Length: 487
Length: 97
Image (cartoon, rainbow over the protein chains, first blue to last red):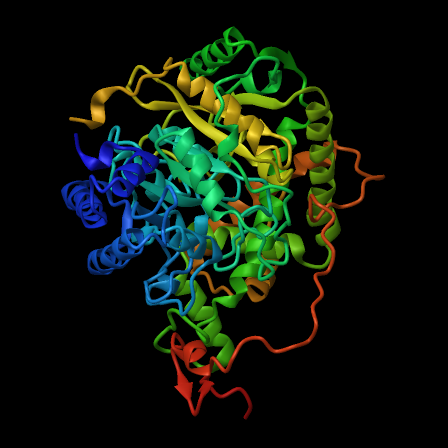
């Protein structure tokens, strides 16, 4: 059995027990990258030399007893919107094609303290704007289950890399579903934590009030372990929250007796693929058989989440992306006349179509005369949506639904109609608006063999409920990974 | 399509966004933005007259600290990625005549 088919925690144990060296683990990851990367394009940057050098350093620290944690020596891939000192960080955009950060994102620093070895940076939708990974300036990522299909987005490279075993685990970021939806499409597990749990310091901002970094891995145990490593209160991120506890692994308990699970009726209506629906409801049944109390309920305002999200996210993006002006870092146009022309040409040449689309929309909804009608209206809607979830969590511990309405679409099928693409985020987006934690776990495959994701949503700071439910579901073994990636 | 975006609006948004679109891109952007605004107009079905806009889900307050310098002189690092540098500063095209 290859080292890469182990979970991160299993590999960490073997390294700790001296059955495997860190170098062997890193070499196994690089071998897999070299084998499948030409087809899949999961990475923008692979740092083979750096990873091998780091492997030696980490091995020493393990040997002398400095590093004792579960992830010490385990190779990881980082989404390319997190700054990594001395390693190219592009956000999959031309405008950052030459950007080498001089500092490292706090979440990545936390992983390094835990002994992680960084293999490289994963491909993504440009500036995390997209649901298919096709908006990357460095080419689309292919879904390892079927290379004619997309891996989802925007953390498509991270999720595909985990599925294809080109890393032991990865970090992604989730603004409107960007961890959960590609996790669903790639048959891996991913968590979007409660807003403020993981520091955003060094995460290149898209929609700052929605962005959260989270783990992508093979199973729930890995995700809880990784989340425990990356979560921290960070004064450098002014929205970082001082949580009462940062313990997530104690929720890895195979027991859901009495856990109250609500299924929003509106999540199973029009637009939901029949096979996805069946697989998700079958998973709910499994949890019910294990003693959870499962019932349907009416969650209001589901249809208003997407329009509210696109106003808020676009508004924040237009402001956040104003920093890319060809002065401080990144690409600058070659020929220009004066400062303003330089700004305009740099940005017009450096950004791709989807990014421009959202900056334009964001600038419009924030402009005087439209600010109240669009931006404030969306923020008021967000308050109403949050209230709906508050009401639901008075009754339920966990909300259960699909992560996405379909399995992975074919490459080239989504980008032509932006509204249609945005509708694919219907089950994930409101979680970001309300700041809630959510997890996607594999719960089946459709008749084409493409994975289906089960989404479990918890109340703010109640990650433990969703981790417990996801873990208990996983332990039943009712979902078997088809061996198609073993070839 | 209920929302018709005029050329003037596109021109104005282009100035705000500091983006210069080609004629072809402009037409596409006009139609995309119109469609998206039609979709966003769905929010008008909701009565939000007594609802405060929510910018953050948690009551986040200003995070204050003592005004003490904790980082050192990082000029060299800060300039490392700049497309143009002159005498320890960012170099930009001439801005005054």
